[in-house]
Length: 117
Image 1 (cartoon, helix red, strand yellow):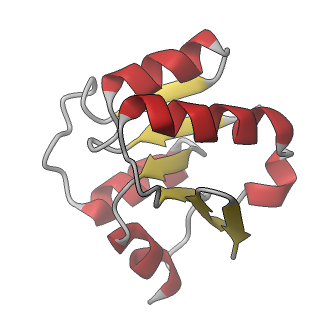
Image 2 (spheres, one colour):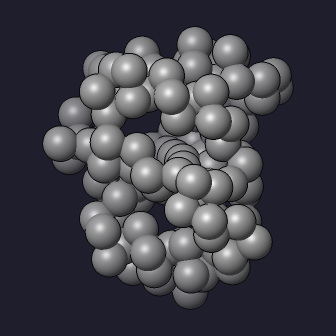
Image 3 (cartoon, helix red, strand yellow):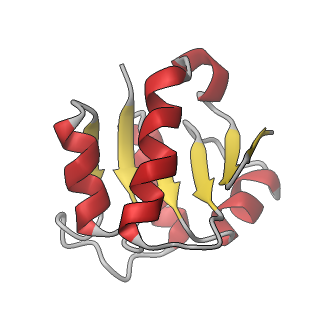
């Protein structure tokens, strides 16, 4: 079962759309954790076994150097970061991908390109 932690830069509309698709999504914004450090968000996600959803490329650097433990990060690097476009690209990807393919991995989602590192 997928469990996600939406960083504060993920629009509430995206969170709502994922929940309508029956994904378990916890929002940093709703949890009143806006402004929390990336490291503390990473620790919360790891503690709750949640994959982080973010537009912030600093998470990619954080988990790769110095290799901090994590449950996974999906980095959304779409040219159009509007909620509607994020939903159009993210929801189908999540419906099709198997958890074991992205668990504990960095996924970079772009228009027409997905990298799993």
